[in-house]
Image (cartoon, rainbow, N blue to C red; front, side, top):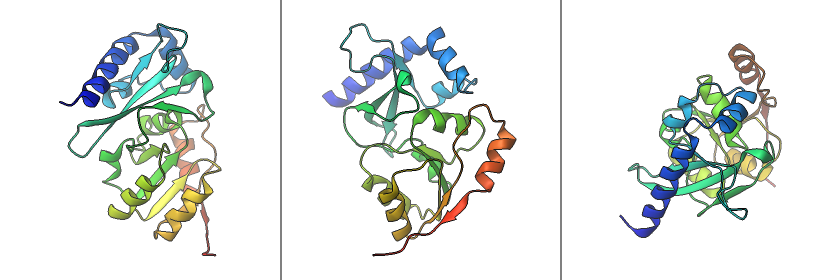
Length: 201
């Protein structure tokens, strides 16, 4: 194991220990409708309380990214106190969340943060990921895996969606995620996603 992977694994192990039985984290996730905490174990997600004031990952969900061989390739932190705003702390821009499941689907749901993605996955929408880092990795992944439809749950990232369309994917716009909604409400919202058309300049 190289030094980088060793550091990632150590960081992940420490954060997963901190996540276990952490009331602050459980209360936050429950507030946003994520009650099945085993979803953290499923994706090996941890939490860093931060021992020092200038800790890079203080109050961050620690989310690992794995390559096709299940080797860790990156860790990113998302500050739960910043939700729903963007902003990540990471070792590098690489990795696609939930890519193992995404390969099984031709329709992909994209969110702009991990909280919304975990909420949807908890309800059974296993074809969900969140946008992070370099856009080109998504273009390549969706092209290789022949993704036919991308459903966006946010406004913004129009350049990314435009390039998805140029790659041959159909783009649909769903409503904003409401964490108080039931699974049936979310299913209806996703099913009513509106097609968005992009044209070459």
